[in-house]
Image 1 (cartoon, rainbow, N blue to C red):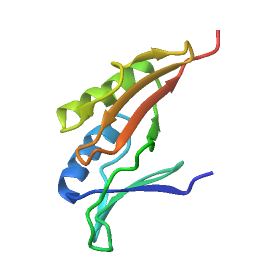
Image 2 (image 1 turned 180 degrees about the vertical axis):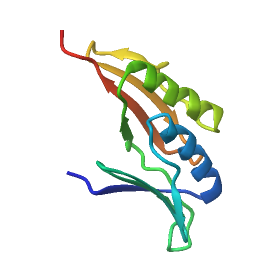
Image 3 (image 1 turned 60 degrees about the vertical axis):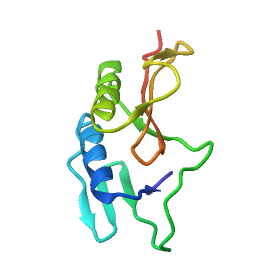
Image 4 (image 1 turned 30 degrees about the vertical axis):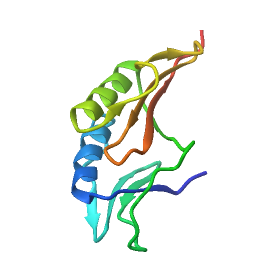
Length: 124
């Protein structure tokens, strides 16, 4: 459904370091800088951060979340730990199973964007 997701940042270098670490736990190669943006590309889509081109400050979307697919609960937990170690902030409940069907780990990135590492548990 999606070709790419782009969120704003006010500090491109800080955002690149954060997402290189977090996405690296998912096997994604380091992002590449293209002017005022950084891109991380996979077979299933592109994630990007960008300094706003209108010259205004980047702001977070109230009610917005970007979710990253994880291959296991351990990978989602590692994703969360990498985020904390690289300037992210833990939010909501600690990483764990919710609703009996998903392992979820929530963070705010250094710019305040809400992100989630999600692993869908196998059906019993």
